[in-house]
Length: 306
Image 1: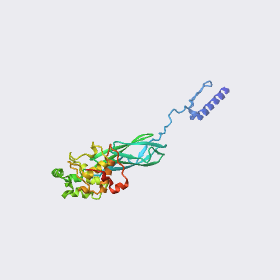
Image 2: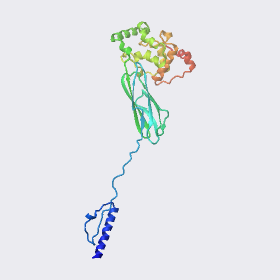
Image 3: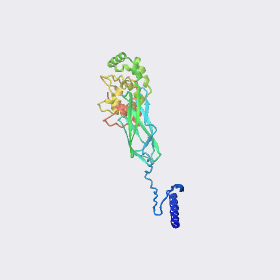
Image 4: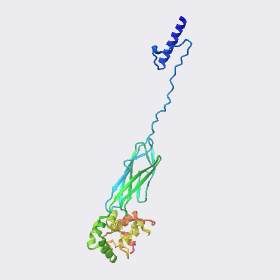
């Protein structure tokens, strides 16, 4: 009997010790009675089956200072300019291989092509929209093709109607058209001088186009007999524009703008305007090279015939 009791005490102590080592707590007063031949099996702790917490990877992308930029144009303004600051927000280098505007009237320039941006590195991308012939609100996009996918920036422009066109009533415009049909040079005389001469008196290039050409060709009230310069079917180049500016066009409303022909423009103004139009509107005909000396002395006029 004493041997059995000693053996029971031994197993009781071993069970309590094992239970405590496994993290369990056994109260002696609540431990169930057992026989000396009873086998005690305590549950062993199982390894955790919960999935490890996944750390989200960094997003490989470019970040713009603004995804959408808006510009409010002035009357007769022919260009809207934008600048986007682009930053590599990823942990690896990103290469911008190309930037594609949504249409031909929009251009974009990167510092390099292709352009490699290291982590955290950034730079500027300039964009321009040609507003000639456009009215109201327009939206264009720039699509950036990169080694981590494409990103899009949006450009919006609000273009007002020319105030000079709105200042004339329909009756006034009709009367002015009738007078110009008889004498195209009439727009440089009388009350017409304030709009067709004074505004562009000292202007050159684009500013001269806005002042002296846009008033008719870019007007929201442009008459059907006034041509849309952006939709000409005739091939044009520097010589074409210079000839038209100097001598006008017979049997049309287009007057001769050169001083030598009774118009208000100096030789320098004619050359600057023809140069601007050849860059912005010319197509199909190669541009004739012009030296600085020829430009300064107006030598191109010698080859132009009315």
